[in-house]
Length: 166
Image 1 (cartoon, one colour):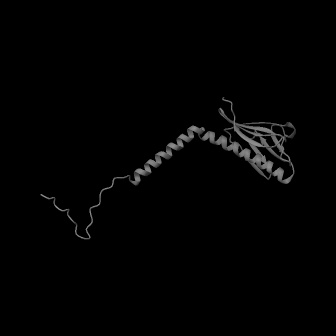
Image 2: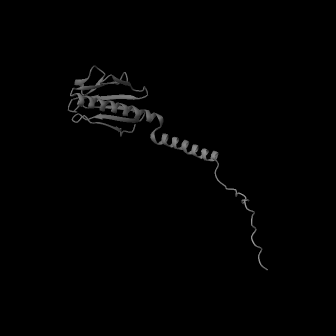
Image 3: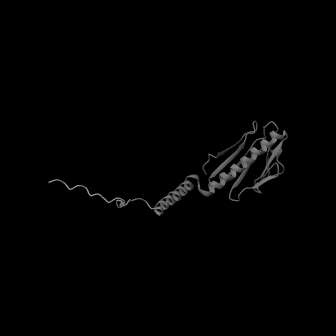
């Protein structure tokens, strides 16, 4: 016996669609949402959370304003001064720039007394050649701290996490 020939469909009749198994849009969105939430939590845990972000952000802002003050001194050829008041939690840069430091942060300034505008305030003077009087602004919250340093000879502004624990 021979096998029956395969059945042919009449012209214009298509084979029934096969059911394709896959992932629905809702399932995909759920997975993406879980991955995003996990990433945010992991990032907060590794970077010290939102308190650490506030500390870093403030240190970066002060460093940027110190660099601005140095650049302005070089551009104008005139000495420019950056002033910080740890007790009032404020800073002032040339050109009417000023800002406040969040209450949650402790502020310390170490620098030359000769350029202090008044008792309790600190200042860093930048000169037309880029040099500076130097100094350090330390911002601390709990056991974390960041130092913003100004080199006296070159006026270079650097920022780094303080190595002390406690």
